Length: 441
Ligand code: SF4
Ligand code: SF4
Figure 1 (cartoon, rainbow, N blue to C red):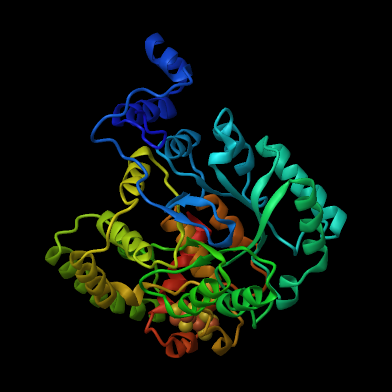
Figure 2 (cartoon, rainbow, N blue to C red; figure 1 turned 180 degrees about the horizontal axis):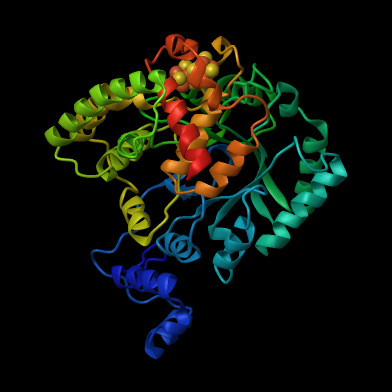
């Protein structure tokens, strides 16, 4: 019997070809098969979703691998074809809703769990305004309803209880336009609201009682805050979706950037140079680590990172952003996978060798020590978008829009933040390099 969650390798590759070259360029027979509603017979070695988990009190059986940012419509469709049924999107992701709409067209809507989000610090946030905004989201996706509408990164505790939002959600639920309500949070924008850590905001949301699903940050380098949130979710049967699960610092990109600066004979600030030397020591350790574990790319660590978070039974689904068909296939292959001793050893070694390069998501502990008020954690997140996620333009515009001081202030500072970091992150140099990348690239 045909498995609806199964996509053959040939189909997957065919989707790749079509995604890259376009349907018009494909042979006629292939075009006919692409247009046909029934999928071709699955093949034995095909990637497929194997794990499903109940998304808290929604009762929905979601795939353990979900979708995150969409880079390519063909890749996104291929993930759905392979059985991914949790879709994460947001009003604030440019063009995302339309891509999702095109990808879900003709599919069994009930088999998908679509989550969108609306930020409450922009646009019309009255009850009527939010209802209108939500309807527009649905219209753009061409769907009658979303399974979950989230409060997107509330930056102040009072936004968790935003009455306009909750009233709008009640109206939309009554109309059958929204089934469940959630909240997404990955950390504070301390320069706007210092008290909004991910943990405190999500615990407040759990306490509030009106949120059914959380989207939060959790990974093997950063667990504490999320573990407390999971406890509350377990108690209140709140569903959990994850983001920021793969804290893979683009170490080589950093190294290359530093080397290029030297090659170009650019004047390097003494503080930056000192930081570079610290990177070099860490770089040597990283090289030794790569050699020991025979890792010639970041895939192995990334895959172990996903298996690590899926090993936690409190995790319902992990949002994965695939840029290529190859990446999508690798993510899907992780569905239902077990975290093993080899993974454990690799991650422990990674933590030991390279963990210091990772500026923890949702941290910001060092930020109050900065006399210039530089939003350290936010800048490093934008740098992550730039260097690890290929979202260069977006990262640069976000960086340009930061109000107040940016990382250029770091070139004439004695590095208070670095001394304040409990994780030993060589942050001053990382900030300077991030500034260099986000301004010039
Ligand atoms: S540098 Fe350290 S203290 Fe500062 S935000 Fe990053 S991890 Fe947190
Ligand atoms: S290096 Fe200085 S200016 Fe830059 S974030 Fe740290 S404390 Fe602030």
